[in-house]
Length: 244
Image 1 (cartoon, rainbow, N blue to C red):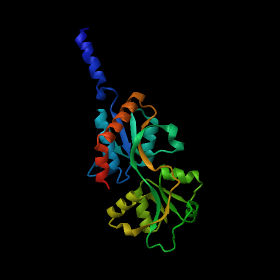
Image 2: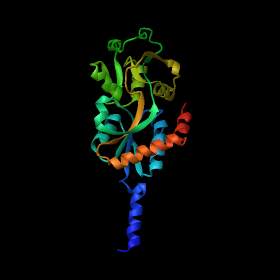
Image 3: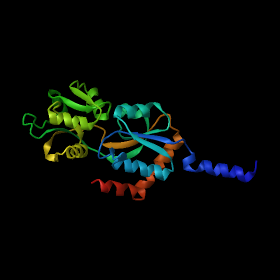
Image 4: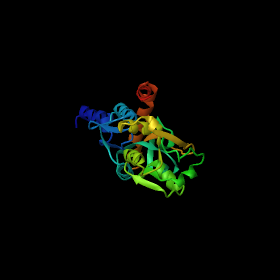
């Protein structure tokens, strides 16, 4: 074989896009971090992940699924990335963690007009009320691990808001950004909701992008380096500022 052809093949192999198969990127409808608008996946987390993938040079597909489906794909298939996902001990060994893409704080919301639901200091007091959760997401698993049985499990946060408005659930644990986004989308202002508890001991304060265990460690390393690069060169900060 011609030596120049050998070197060409080697050079092409080193190009990031040749280093792995097309990556399958999955997420859920969880605005403002990731959501579907006019058949396009948008959001803070989406922009960060796409900038990382562009920096790393990988081709990819990107789709929104119910969270239970998204996390099932990321647990079972090779070359799958998932975001925006919380990291906590029960999940640590289930994924290869690439890095933080956003900061998030969680609260328990009720309707502002519910005078019978007062702010409470201990999360255990939420057992007196029905709670809407997203099936298999981090907060639901957190509550289940603490023996909460008063959960209504739904596919997404939009369903939780609608049930809250209809009086079919009493409490909605979620981030403030997400709660207010869906309230506005439904034609309500943030004043429709009130925070009745801050979930301070929940360890999901950062949102991550992670890879399936069957994804090559070389791919994960390249993505980690790409995420670090966009945080150093200002791209990441520019994205975050647009959502403040």
